[in-house]
Image (cartoon, rainbow, N blue to C red):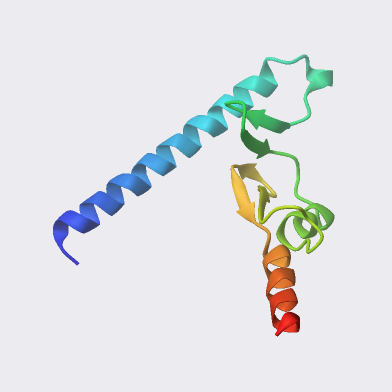
Length: 101
């Protein structure tokens, strides 16, 4: 791998990290602007990016990481800002395709 390629990759990673931090800060500010009794610590920021700063639970982790019945392959993270892959949905699709052959 050339030095130029690794610099480009590092630059992209740095950009993604910076955007993620900025979105996280925006989500916290959004919650702190609400009256204390109306703060849910989960929702969306920038109109489409999900966030969830509630204490993670096993039920929520299972729902977001292993839910074969879900309608999509990605969903909100268990904790933090952004999306996560629903491995259960991928597994269900693979099993469906294998059964068809």
